[in-house]
Image (cartoon, rainbow, N blue to C red; front, side):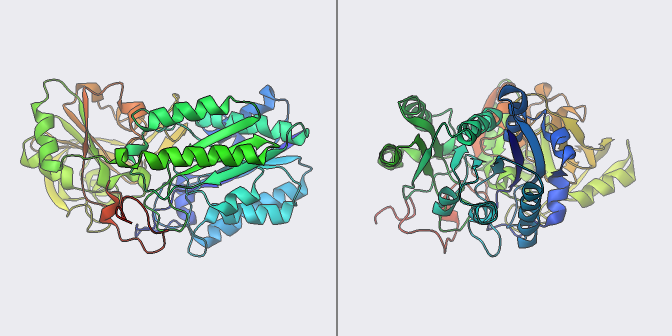
Length: 489
């Protein structure tokens, strides 16, 4: 059995001004052929799960291409074209029995609001109606009917933070082998309640989502059931298919799949009022952190969530920390220009300059700081634990650590990097457990890394491209009515 492996993954924030071109994928990960195997075989990622199937399930892998980029604005159509063409060419030039595909599910291009659906449509057209295609999806996928129509099966992560990515890939690989051997005949159903779930409400470790996941797992063990994926959706995409979804895969039984998907969607809809989450603003959050007896206290900068496509250079919390004299705090900013200025000053040199607020005006204005350059780094590290994102090789680009006058430690990196791994800071020699406050530009994804060391976590209602309330955004293309925007409809 020969199984092709590949994919393209991007979470596209349609409100973000930063487009995602080919260079952004090269900065993230762009691997082909044997390089794909080398890059992903040790990763706690679905592609790592695909590759593990070689030994566990007894098939040969035919690597195609795997492209991944940090969330930002919509992807250039040319990137989609190139990746899909290369997957098709590789499958056509080799004798393969099926394709395992890693997709995000919330990728958008200028032409295609459901870009993942377009990827699957082209692959299906080229490879034929009977060719087995099984795809994995991120928990934040905005699942479209086209995606369900064009794949034999879709399986999504069921944890947030995403620590089940490799098992998800392994499950997809197992289903693929059964499909190739014609031992199963998958039937899929999709149900989409008219909801917008903010990211904090999607946390699978807190109620009510935890209980819904438990029910999904219970039902998944029932006769005839192959997979149930309860998807949170990605609220920062103004596209028709935005929102949560339930994907059910049953063996030969379409009625079972339909009934189960509809039931789970009704359960979500019935709990809609319980998904509301309220958070303090920056001033209150910093004050509360300073009153906490022991650290580190993690302040979660919700409006500048890099993993949701924001700039990563927001200064709202940095400004408040300096204002309130929060010595012992660590703040990371994506600021290539400031990093270069620190590098010019050299280790031990004085740094004076404007930091942050340079991509747009939604995350706070640039802030002038003075301090001493503590250290300079290439910004690379490896993550060996199961963490959100599943990356093994990590790179935040050339990075400078500056001790700002007043006691705040500033990390200036040159590649936008979500705080999914403690290695982002510990690789710089920072003793995170001894810090008083750590600012993470995230929502929930950081918890797998920072949860074990945090004395407390305070989620902060900051402005920006990933603000926690959907009421902060002007949607023009989503389905209406949608709760909670149209609460009275």
